[in-house]
Image (cartoon, rainbow, N blue to C red; front, side, top):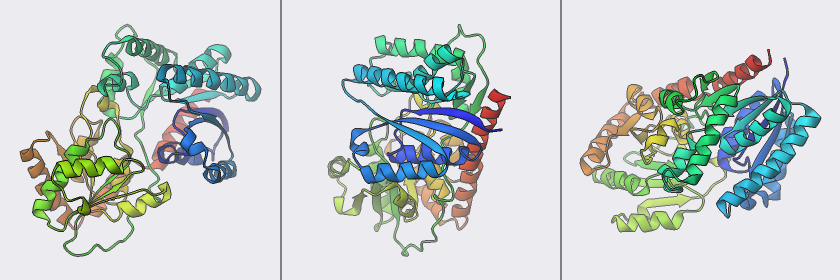
Length: 397
């Protein structure tokens, strides 16, 4: 049965995250469903006409109608309100003309648009949470704790949870706090856990033979609010004490100066660090040059609902990973499957122990196979798309 879906994403598909976590899913889902995609694209990306046309052609090839809208950033509250108004107008027009059976809202701003569409047309509504957004804003210091914006967003969150016909969350660790988050809500709709899966045909071992004695520690992605640059550099510094030829490879678009300044501050030779910018398609090849990956994140309440994409990308390429406790389901995945190390603290003793354990893992001749098998178990894009298709089918039976 073909299902008509209106899919709304606040992440732009012109960005690497959108290509990994929106475009890749839609390519699978469009095989059995008819999809209209509304995405909010940042100006710096939407100016790239060649990339825009390339993605439009790609989407058209597998039957997805794409409507890119401009993402507004500042001033924050007014900009988001503008996006909601414009998005609601466009989505309402599509709903009245094309009559989708389901509005799939990826995160909170699209959920507000989807809630209004459901109230207007009765269309089924999937609340794909992508984490505890309001709590992330306060944990990250972007909003004051229990301030007006936080309380307003939590009020909307309660209404999203009540009105949704199905909820998707990224981690099993989030299920208990999610059910306890709004005590006045007596019953929630069905909940499915779908982590941030990746295309394991793209993120796969590349068969690279690394030079003997050379150890490459790597990091992929932006740093921003959550990723702990100083702590990751501290891991690299301790690693250098064990492997004199160790180097750090960082794949990052706009934060080269910050990395160099932080390295100098910690007494690390910047010549041992390579920071490069590449297109999304080139990322798997660079991960395949790494012996171990980095994924140290600020631990706080909201992060129990997070599933970092880079964990799936590292493991898919057969690369073990440094993580830390309190980040979604990552500790169990890394430690139980012996595909990485989860730090319990960031003091020198804990970092030293973690580095020694990682070096033992890297020397294990089966580590690559184990990482790959773990990625296939937890982060297969095919499995994630199948779960979404099952949700679509259950709502339209």
